[in-house]
Image (tube, rainbow, N blue to C red):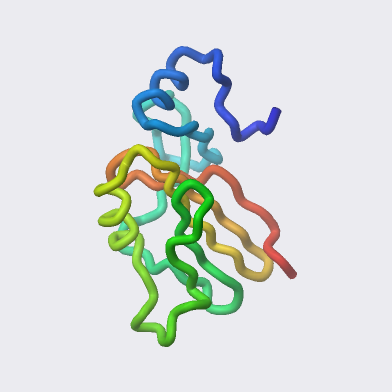
Length: 128
């Protein structure tokens, strides 16, 4: 089993998944941030951040379907922010919304797990 997947047999996480309408993923641990649901620690994507990496690609997905891609933006002013992604997600919250930041030497993946609560669930070495 993927260490980031929540067990279907854990009553607390099963309840959260049932309320959310999709499977919620464990957050990647970080310092000084306490999870309100599980008592663990995780990193949250700031709402004012821009969904862009410059060299690479940044994506917003809903149930694995691409809603926004940095590569499709015509200029920097067309880049989406996390706040704009939140505005979309709030109108359709029972779906699996994710933000993927894929750059050289760094890859970060966030899942929306409540209002203004984008949790880092996976990170990697990027594509270089």
